[in-house]
Image (cartoon, rainbow, N blue to C red; front, side, top):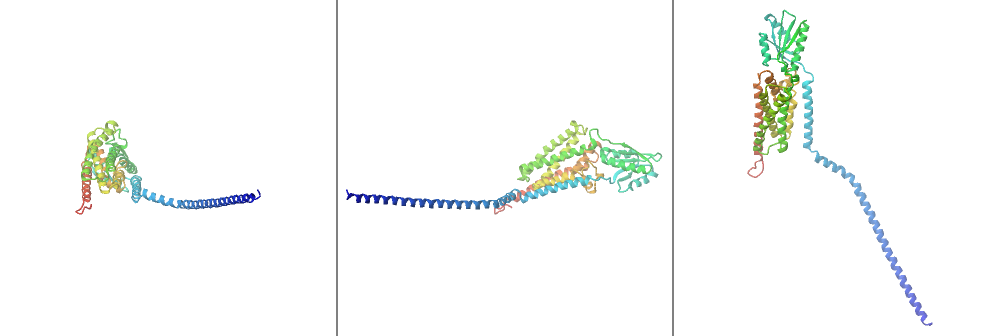
Length: 404
């Protein structure tokens, strides 16, 4: 029994040693786990630092992206177009306000009927008025003066009666109410200075539906707007410059039926529908068709020459310059020199005066206007086709296969 005890102790010691070894292994495992945990913590710190760096870089990149997007959205071409719109806007204001802000009569024609011994002195007195509002010439008789008013040659006539204190002033409000009113004011002032009076007779009055004689003016504006809008629309939908000369010819041909229908529509509106201008349906219809065609072909010519910018040039010609000088609100005798000079040289003015003469003056004196409007239509078509031919030739390849 006693000999076996030392053996049991040795076995117990071995077991204790094994337990100690196991504890040591656990300590090593715990140390490894701790090292892994520390490594993980270090990675988290590194990741956090990287995130902070990325976050710090984001605010600096945002302005660069915005500037790039702005440059892409607002190109130099866009800025140029915006500048062009601004110039058109300012031109519109300048032209309309410049033409209408201070109307003054200037050399408005007036015939003077008086006895021979009085006629020369009366004419000299009228022409000597400051700022020359009137341009007086002699007429042989009241009948002759009246006929000249009725055929639209002059807007007014003064019949002097030396044996009485009252003279007679003949006017044609149909030729323009502003001009007739201006003549009446000037004559009234002159007569009052001489202690005389003037009885006013309207030889060619306006139709009852034509308030202030503006119907013809707005009718012409409507026709011209329709003409350049349809051409601009075709340009926007199919390209400002026609792809081929054949396409250009097709567009021009398409303008003709539109012009006929547009002219018809305008004549129906002011005649049968509203009763503003009555009795001259066919003449107004074909005048309108010619005006629409002229506006359309000129617009197309500008598009062929200048691309999209051609629409702006059209607005400049027909709206900014053409409307104020057309003699609508104020006739030529009341406009400043520039607008007075260009009025009848543009379709707006030629068309407005043609409507007046057709409705009120038997069509006298419209031949020149019709030739001018037809000339615009023909010139627009010729330029559009010629410009398209040049564009076709530039697109044709050379012998080397390079487009020229």
